[in-house]
Image (cartoon, rainbow, N blue to C red; front, side):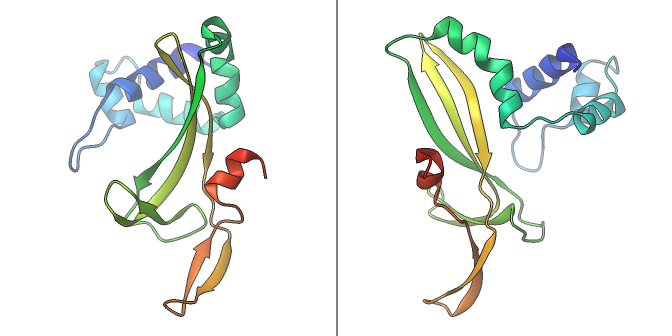
Length: 157
C-alpha cells in the first residue's frame, strides 16, 4: 500500500469542504498539488486496494492505543451521502434524515469514533444495506429494508 498517497488523499478529504454543486474530487487534489499527483495515479490506487472497515481499524489501532484511557468513549453516529440521481439498489436507497425531517435517497454510513484526550479517531464503519423487499402496510407499496436495524447491528444481535 502506498501509505504516503493514502495519507495525502485522506488529509485532502478531511480538510476539504464543499458547498452546493462543488464536490471534493481527485481532480481537485491534483490541481491543489499543481499536478504533482495525477488524477489517474489516485484513481488507480483507490481501485487496487480494499479500503474496508477492517483496514480502517488496522490504520488507526496504534493511535487508539496511544490515547486509550479510562475516560475514553466510543461515539456511534450515521450520515447519509445523498445520491438523488442514482438508481435505487441495496446500497443507494431511501433513509430517514433526522436533520432534514424527511427521507433522502443516498448511502447511509454508520461510523464509530473513539474519543479520548481530545482526539477523535475513526475505528470502524458500516454501510447500511437494504437487502430485503417488503410491502409497506401503510402505503401498500414495495420498499427495501435492512435485515437488522442499525441499533441491532452495533449491539451485535
